[in-house]
Length: 460
View 1 (tube, helix red, strand yellow):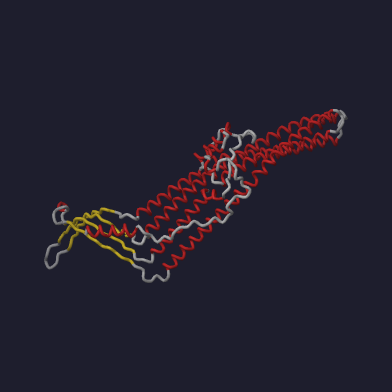
View 2: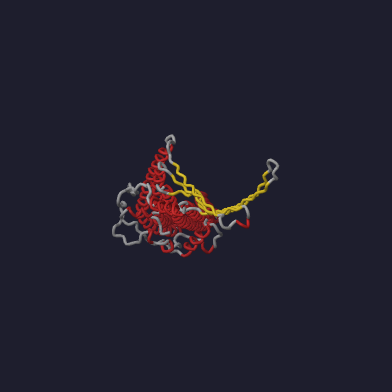
């Protein structure tokens, strides 16, 4: 029996090394070879070569991101999902090896006597070790399933990396949104204080009969408009704080919170490169490709279903009617029971299973191609906005400077008695709106860099 076991095990190793998995060919990327408007001479690093600790330059922002990675529940779920899929792969891999087990049993039985004989009590004790229903993977069915499980594990790991990159980008952008709304609140409060001072002055002037009701109402209208802005920004800032604390997953140190966008150091400059092949390193695209490889491996398992399956059950042990003689001479026993199952007629189920696995592969191909197309569009949009946002910021900074001079000159002309206070109100309102817009442009510019870092795969 030992020679038979050795022969069958050797045959399983030799034949099982082959599978019926189709040769894998990566589908061609259904996007242009180069990004539109990409700079071939750019010297900035690619995002996947730049860890997030080096991309973000603001120390307080980095501290918030580190706290998020340690406490965020979504990332924790993604990490635990990797552990689960890895365990499932180990389970599938274990089916290639025989499962050895030991079983011990004892039985006592009383039989009634016949033809005047006395009743008898018999005993039977057994100890056996062996292999139960071990499939000899002659046609690679189990190995194909193992390959599919391995690719699923790789896909889950890439999904975890993608979740980490997305989380880093989300917390950074939420942090900047809070900074922008906090700055907007400070601007609104400063403007409101100035307007309230003007209103108090006009109320005294009206009481003395110097100012008119129209001028008083014009100032009062401006005050109420700014008061509404203050209330709006208070609400936005509170919502931003709650959103940031939720994504961080733990209480935040107030010393880490920003008060303006200008106070947050901008991230490092990065490059998308010229070739769109850089997209193939994005975690979501790598995950989609591993899913495609898994679907391809499942075809091998479906093909193997057309061929016989051989299962081996074998064991050695000892049997005795006395517990004390269980391991004595002459009590040894063995069993060897190979089983062959060959499909003859299954009503087309096996062929349907193969067709389903092929269709699943085509679905995986479509999902892979769609992921690449989506990534290409995201990178292209981020690149197009990048240059325009720089121009917007420079123009908005110049506008704020010009309106600040306009407000200063209007106030001087009013105090000199040349113009009415209406000119000061208009200039002040225009300056306030331009300052708010500048905060928004600065926020968009930094958010665009973060988005570009994320859509190019990051460095997590």
